[in-house]
Image (cartoon, rainbow, N blue to C red; front, side):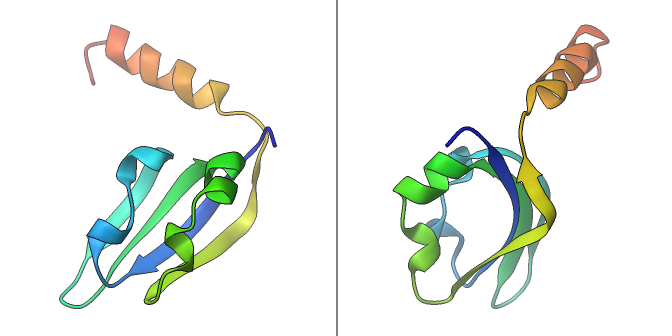
Length: 86
């Protein structure tokens, strides 16, 4: 599997997920009893792990979830680094 998916994840305990599994996190919100995030993850990482199958963890694919390449994101990040923004 050589593609990425954009996902919405809701979880009762942040320790159930590893932030390092994601290519990037677009949003992260913490509330009293739940946290949720929107992030991009490599499909193979998702396939090979089972954290998203745990009780009180919800994973939903976002609209237009399949992303074939993340190179543009890496280039954009590098441009910001060179500009001294990141």
